[in-house]
Image (tube, rainbow, N blue to C red; front, side, top):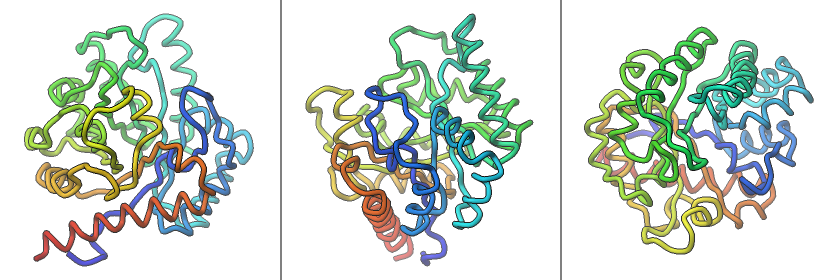
Amino acid sequence: MSGSTIPPLVAAFYTLAGFRPFESAGPSPHPLRLRIEAAARAGYSGIGVDCVDLAASVAEYGHAGIKAMLADNGLDFFEVEGLGDWFAAGAAREASDVVRRNVLMAAERIGVSHVKLTGNVVGRSVPAATMRAEFARFCANAADAGTRATLEMVGISDIADLETARFVIGDTATRNGGLCADIWHFQRGGVPYSGLADMWGMVGWVELDDGRSSDYGSVISAQLDERRLPGEGDFDMAGFLAAIGNAGYAGGMGVEILSNEMRALSLDEAAQRSFAAARGQLEKHAARTSA
């Protein structure tokens, strides 16, 4: 496999955000302009923001300003994540819908490659049938705005396995919905990569990171503070990349590193080290598959 076939990489929000989730609601202390420029210098093809960071950045630069910064730096992917309560009702849903409108407006005016959603992570259970109906509704809204939705299987959410994710995604995969497959939640959630064989055509985004394969410390601390760069942990990167390919996925990939070490680096160091590590793993995979 030649270098030209290696998928483009996107710096996921928390890779360059510079703060720990749950300790701050954001936005990033690093202006979006600086993050975009650092990502581009490192070789990334895109960057991510969350909903709070998106709102702050729109207030600072405007939609047109963000679109111009992305274009000027050659970034083709702009990911948005962090929309909560998209599946809720009542006051929580009303607040969520305000954020939804802001995100979809950004999709129309800036161009958003995809919106990344997760299930409920705050301890209350939401029926899978409700999730399925609301995910389809969100996908319809996203299509009208010119973007798509990916649903991340997260070990600490109520969408923690592929069976539930496949049910919630439903037939939106034939339009503009799909699975966000992060190696962390497979490896640390005990979800076999082989299950991706039943997700043919349903994978809509992929995220790379690494870590210890065995349990240690608290689940939250491991997930937020101890991720490692691709190739620097115990995860079966080769097996994961092969499984993703066998599921029919050949698109871009995000690099999502949440760690105390990464947060202590400068923007350029964080961008360059994360890009080089992920790119190195993809080059190894390309060499294996072309041999």
